[in-house]
Image (cartoon, rainbow over all chains, first blue to last red; front, side, top):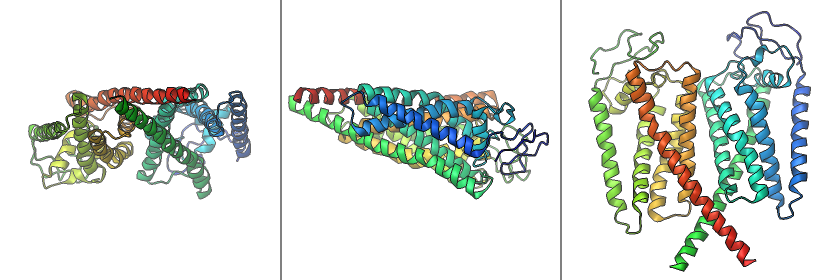
Length: 227
Length: 227
């Protein structure tokens, strides 16, 4: 995937549709395997460290420990990767082989709206980075300390992630769904890489919802008894 | 505001920016006061009927009754007005003086992205109409029957409304914020008409969040006591 052209031709970019110009584009320097490898290894490291730390508290169930790992991983992804994108409108011009710019140059092959700065994508990524990112890290803390707002916080973030992903997919559909360079990038980046943020938030939302309802119901019964 | 031109000129529309073409546009038939009057009176009627019906249940607090009125009003607005918009891509060509088409021809003076079919606006309005609309009516029922999911449902819908409104305003800002025909339309339609969907969902979110935390905390204390 690596390229060394300095990108002097205005229309010389690997994104679809080719008819859209991207003046000043500088091709990526890192290979696909380097980009994915760094993200994969960093993520595994975050999960491993969170798992170890969460194990110090003897009361935590395995599920709660896995949830802490998820919130740490997704929170750091939101803050660092998506935070960089949201506030770097010119990442595609980067010449320094900055890893974060390289990530988005690569991901744009699956969804060129990142390189072309689609307002819907930037709005969703901005909200995700600024609001959901810190909220995810708060969720790690809330589960660790058994805070009473733990379930409602997890539900709120998960619903936000689902809403954002829905806007993300629906706007692409409405705009013609022609933003992937090849079908492989479409399925690997656009579909598969986003699937976790549909499946996991759905499962967490259902679990949190049920726990909250059970707590409210228990409180209601208690109130009726004391009457 | 009424106009009778049949709109044969492709670029003859009252929306900003004028440079964007809107082929087949047919000017509105109803006056601004008729459009706003019908919406205002219908809304008051919905609130009045919900208030009367909610009063039959002696246990309901005044706040719960007001919340039922809000959910009935906002739910019907989502379902009928926004549902019509989401699934009527050619409303601006309507020649039948259909009230719902007239509403959006008029509102587009405050935000032309409705007439021009901006993907972000359509995505948010579609989610609002299809998911939040029915959920709001379920909230009326949930409060009326004192269901255990009442608070969590109200929180989920309110956060969805806040997320949608945030995407709505942020995308407009990113795209240049030049979609209002005049400053009056900007402040009256774009800002003031949407303000309720920032203020009220924020207040409901805070209230629901606190109630849920209190219930979870009470359950936690109960569990500790029984140990």
